[in-house]
Amino acid sequence: MFIGRERELNMLDNLYKSNKFEFAVIYGRRRVGKTALINRFIGNKKAIYFMGVESNAKQNLENFSKSILEFANGFEVGSSFLSFQAALEYVFKLAEKERLIIAIDEYPYVARSYKSLASTLQLLIDKYKDKSKLMLILCGSSMSYMEDNVLAYKAPLYGRRTAQIKLLPFDFEETCAYFKNMSEEDKAIIYGVAGGTPQYLLQMSDKLSVEDNIKNTYLNPMSFLYEEPTNLLKQEVREPAIYTAIITAIATGSSRMSEISSKVGEDTNVCANYIKNLINLGIVQKETPYGEKASRKSIYSIEDNMFRFWYRFVLDNNSIIARGAADLAYKRIEPQLSDYMGKVFEEICKQYLWKQLIFGNCPIEFNSLGRWWGNDPKEKKQAEIDIMGEQDKNTALFAECKWTNEKVDIGILDTLIKRSELFNHKTKCYYLFSKSGFTKGCMDKAKEMGNVSLVEYKDICMR
Image (cartoon, rainbow, N blue to C red; front, top):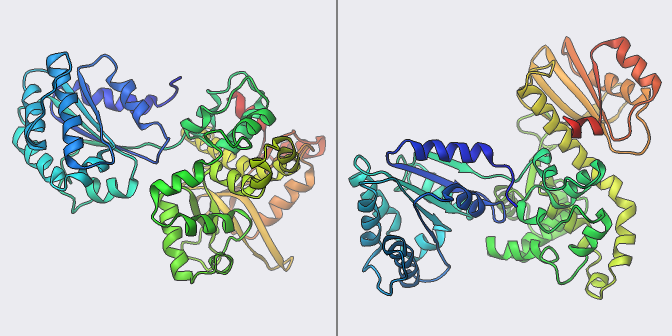
């Protein structure tokens, strides 16, 4: 099933319709749906599709030649081009008379096996771009390679591309399209468990309960997701054991660099380099209190929901899961799910606010959103605001998110107002987000104030 990606498909279609040379770069982490996007786009168009393999140049050239010659002749051919330059030049010449797409998937595998590939492409693009109708697509899962060797200023191909797409996981609204038969609450939990990565969502079924979905995937030693985080790390990094230790430390509550370093048993400088790589992979995120660009109060958390769930719940229960005790493992996990969903709900609410801003329905035209925490000098204790966003120095938004079975009472609103007084904005707007609704007292005060928006989770799903 293919859903979403309308913006990306529209952009590729516009490039295709130009009928002149185009060069698009598509990159993103593994499992995010890059190959599915390419296959959807090329559809019935005249296209050569080739996927590189982690092998030597000879093997990749043979496979590349086979893809080209099968397209040109309409049947399998046993011969091969003598070089990548000869193969690519043949393709450029094919595209002199008619529109043709060539998509090289997993480009880093090919480029690593044949070091001169980027320079060869540069040479041929410069030679043929003004008379060719070729649409070239280079796609890769190694984000660091694509950014450093294809998109970077010093890369041979720099300045030749006409578009780039960094493919990201689906947001919550897009994820819901996968699960039309699920209850609204279950959709949120599945998003919290699997995130927005298409390959992970495909492991879930909207014909099953949340419990059965978790048991069939994370708590099943034979399932795809059971070993996915460790398998993914083995593909992406050289020392997966240290990365695993760092992610485990963060997932189990160590959020500051000193805490992570102590838990892992490595120097902070060493940990910092590993964490930087995890941030680039979209697995870990660094947060500072909203409005503070550089702060000693910086903390780290797991950004990817699949990794977050796996390292929070699966790793601890690995021994009993391996013995087939899925029921016992889920019995241990279930009481913690509501607390786990708190951070997920905050992210869903942020996405809601961004959509409101884009469609002109937000009273504050904020530039960014984030969480704030710091000292409350009046209360003489630490305070936190779930979501904060500034329009300018005088205007800001403050929000609180509650994923509980109880209705949000007036006390939550009073606390949010009191914490907003730590900031000197003249114009303030408040949002309360609730899984289960609001008490009459809270609704009456919100109506009386006039600058408070009460948003129930079901309203987020219905938008």
